[in-house]
Image (cartoon, rainbow, N blue to C red; front, side):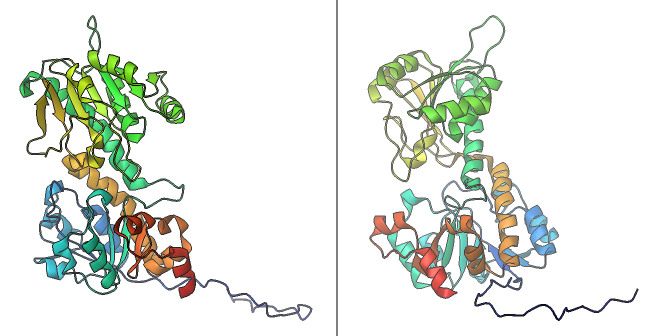
Length: 404
């Protein structure tokens, strides 16, 4: 079929309009590195072999440090079969242009950073150190954090997934510590015919609280939820579709309910700072012997006065004959599920970065990704970090606009 020639009508007037339009940039080939995490209690890996396979099929290069996926039960062979190159030293993996990590950058790793690298990782504000940020600023790093990264609908997808895992897992963990196998009092979480159900108290009606409530209800437990936000309590009831017993955080009511419960879950979110302590030592001392406290908010200091950080190796301690489980980073104990959840967010993001011609362009086009950037070419663009460490803050929107 002959192609028809373009037809231009002489009656059309051609005028130049003074407007510069954004020309879609050329796609960029990415060079991604996945280091092995050596930090405390970190078993997750930020990209699964399946995700790596998709990224490589799109024409990009991925290299990873040997045994990087071991904590999540992914072998080097799984990754090399997907097309990744396995390297054997930290120095080699840090030759990549974009680093994807499941733990924050450590002091040792700062030495390996190259000029103008991009890093996608968590920040963990509570344990971040000033000298790490300063070294990253010197090397003109662009860094995107898991905690502040938003999706198109304005939610934080990675935080949400990790909260869902923590909420669901915590009730299963409670079940283990109530059983005789772990010297618990031999109670089954939930209920069977003819026996009153186990009583579960949940403090905090955020995503962790919601998923803890879902799991506890599914197992047949009686659930009571405390939160100071009526909106959150309403939203939780609507999401779960069950009229639950709810209350605002009133100390007398809380103390009375804790006295008779079997499981108490602390699921208050820390809004940048330390979680408020809402359960005093006296309230804990009045709890039933053998009951279990699970303080999920221990990542931000914990909301029980008796809480102290524990580890996956030695997860519990007893105080007033109450079992305390205070392991930070609970999703890392379910590392494969957590890795898949992180990977589901990062893999499309990386493909988007490539399609838009690099991180600089993505930040220009996608407002939701902008919220996750805390360093841009060495300039600190996160207000909380600048306040905390007394470092110069630069507005990211101005930075990007000035580069256009």
